[in-house]
Length: 169
Image (cartoon, rainbow, N blue to C red; front, side, top):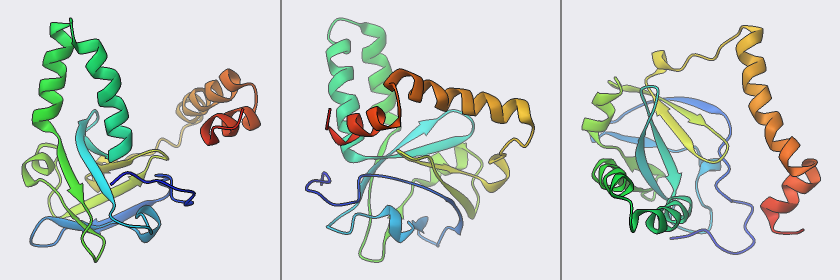
């Protein structure tokens, strides 16, 4: 179910959480990360750096729409989509806010029974706790801040950025 209406929930994921997987390979999403108006539906895809990513279903569908146009006459893109489709899983929260994760995908990124959920603003990053290393050296932090600064530079200012996000230009 796509998130619609004027809800404050827009797929904003902030913070980081350590969780244990239950016997059915489920993890509970923080309540702030769930859609209060209905079912929370996500797509789990492989990511770089021994991680998986959970994308809101609408974000994934928007990507698929763009990728489909590129794949029509591009065999490499067709294979990339086949790879992505074969390695992706749809995840829905149950009434307790739990999602079932794919054990094979978790094994591939080194997750045993403990899992780190990282709010990456627009998506959720899943990894083994030992694979989540936030650099504390100034050079690495500046590199990340430089990437964030590019967003501000491209949009003119934060008002322009927020206006673009909210569709008010």
